[in-house]
Length: 242
Image 1 (cartoon, one colour):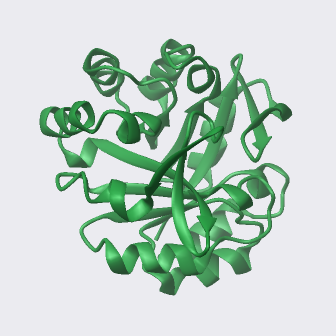
Image 2 (cartoon, rainbow, N blue to C red):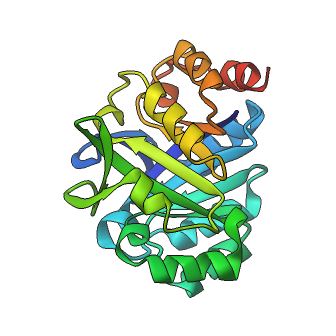
Image 3 (cartoon, rainbow, N blue to C red):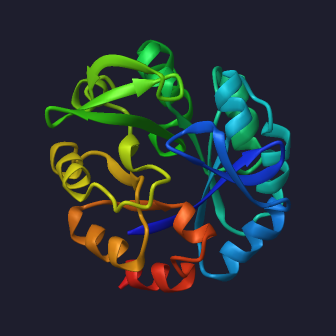
């Protein structure tokens, strides 16, 4: 299982949000380049970066900054936030980013996102679906978690036969360090064997990462717990590789 240390950028600084609320942000670092270097030194092969300004605006806001980070980073970057067209994706991949993340657009415009997958390949695009559990069914939310799509995780995933990577976030656990939804991740890995499932939301300790290992998850996003010193990145990576 790959550990993805997470870096959320707002106005060029590393922050974390609680349950996606922009009015509940904690700033951790003003130097994302130094943070990337520290992740790489700990053994990270990937880092997950979110342009929060772009996600909120629905268009790129910090893509130039992130492209600059990609050109010098020693690990691969998976980048989310504000991607709406092929030109934006192409520019980021050309800068050296490993994968681009597509979220709400995957719900709102499947034809366009399938065109992205056809153009760039399934290994360069990660679909990100954020879910609320409704009577046990993972229902997909959009627009920064403010809107309900009316479709389940399984409905949306079925629209993308060419996809290879899926990031699943349990909204109720994101940024709350309440532990990951292991059952949801295991169900996604079982029902969607063609997808490398990344677990996001709730990781609060090394024990949480260990608990995810038998779930079938291909990766785990570690954010707030890492920034607040609850998880030692090098130790987490070592355990995930064991």
